[in-house]
Amino acid sequence: MASQRLLYVDASRLAAFEWQNGQLQPEGVFALDVPGLEAFAAYLRSRTRSVFRMLVDVVEEGFQIDTLPFVAGNDRTAMLDRRLGQYFFGTPLSAAISLGREKSGRRDEKILFMALTRPADTAPWLAALKDHEIQLAGVYSTPLVIDRLLPRSGPAQPAQTTLVITLSHGGLRQTFLDGGKLRFSRLTPLATGSVEEQSVACALEAAKTYQYLVGQRQVERGVPLQTRVYVHPSHRDTFQQRCHSSDQLQFEFVDLQAQAGASGLKSGLSGSDSSLLLLHLLARNPPAQQLVAEEERHFYRLYQLRHALGALGIIVFLGCAVFAAKRGLDTYTLNNRTAALTLETAQGQQRHNAMLASLPPIPLGPDQLRNVTDQYDRLLKHSPPLDAALLPLSHALDQNPRIQLYKVDWLLSSDPTGKPVQNASALNGSYYAVTTVDATLPPELSNDYKAQRAAVQAFADDLRKAGASDVQLLNQPFDAESSQTIKSDGAAPASRDPALHFGLRVIQNLNPS
Image 1: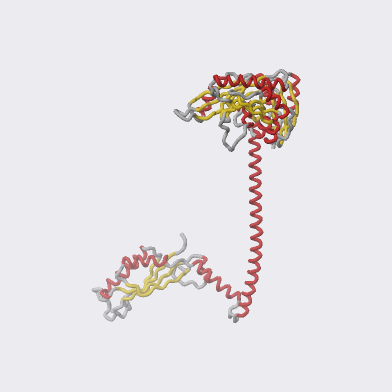
Image 2: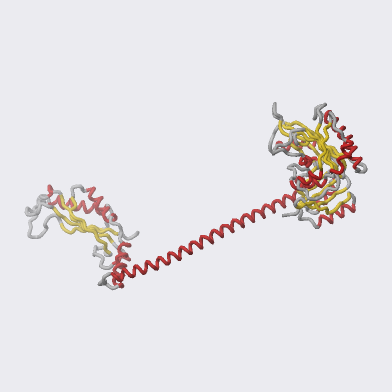
């Protein structure tokens, strides 16, 4: 993961730090002049893979609270950009922060518009970062981080109004928070930065800020404003001598060193300068809102994309490793199961051989038995279903309901004349279904020869229409020997059995078309 570096900018210089696990390591201080900018460029050239965050602490800041209709999506973005342009025209470092919606009426939204109104304080540093393609995560104003100093009693923000006073190289900063949300901030430069000057300025400037907030109706007149002053414990007595609580201001002096320890800052503080603590809070928990335009964060977005792809690659690798481990375990299990089955098969083969040895001898040898079995299997494989041969017979009987079946024989032949199959190997070629039909005519036709012949002929014709390849007449229902007399009126011989049997051979081509 890329190392994290922090830049602290005031009106005259830039200080660079490396942050790692709560430890801030100073890496250089660069003045806002040509030598300082050249030294800063050299500093950046060896740290292009780091992620940078810039904290700006300057006097030239603007704050404006406005109430706007609540909208979302692209309409909200366009509306906020338009208002920022109206309030802070030509200022690239600006932001719009939601302060929540009103609880009555249209429930409009309160928006805090803020900006750094003097671009010259930051433009040279931002240009150097862009020239070296630095991964800039964001530019933050000191008031955006001040709220992290306030104590939290659970997940909710503090509900009371608070004036937070901090000291830095840039001077004395007063930040007004309402319900834990930023409303206003101002920085007062100091001439010497001595403890005496800081304490006097603290008392005077706090009184001025209170009068301003009363005039803006952000606090009620006559209600003491809680004022938290963050100072080093060695300076606390000096501040207490100058800053006295009154009906307007209720001072509370917070041990800056104890606050730093509670926040996880491992670097020591030598004075009341809170810059290191604010930088640490910025690195550990960056605010959601920052000031720089999105195009200035292009290289940071590329870094995030690379980081996300790397994380995705690790996840895919771990998934593949888990899958490979599972497949390896499955293979191991299958190998064990295969070995067990192999042993079981060998034992079964031994039992089978023992059972065969205990059986009486078979007259046929193994080869002969195998040939017979093969022929039987071949016959079963190539034998067509019986319905292919019987369907024409069924259709013909439907057309001739007076004819009664006596017997039906069915066989398979490789000869279209109906010669039976003698060898199963012959079935590899053409084959035919041969059905021998023995049927009887109705008794009322026993004395009518012509009607008998016509009935048999109609039955044969219907068999051909139903799909039979060939129909052969085996025997007539009357005796047609030369010794018998056939009368001209078509009557059958008087000696004929009343059971009028006749036989047909029906041949059905079963070869695939």
